[in-house]
Length: 75
Image (cartoon, rainbow, N blue to C red; front, side):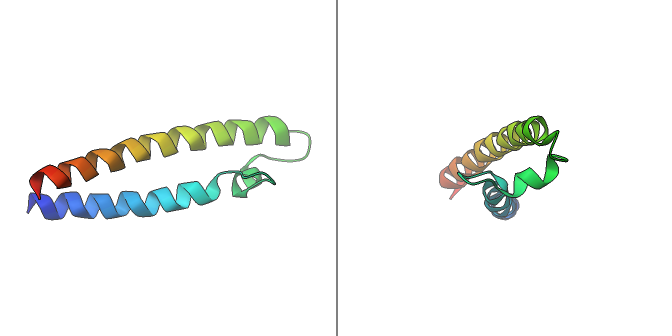
């Protein structure tokens, strides 16, 4: 039961990570630029969005690593 729950959380985190990585800005911009606002506030707005997106990605990666290690120990 516990392994099934952790596996479900692990799969949800994997899907979340895929989405978060795709939202990140690459060399030529990314989907996160859409949330930055207009042309005048695009630099500051997209920088704030990118910083928050990075924080959320790091937290998700840490949780994903934790569930991976937990599944390794329990499995």
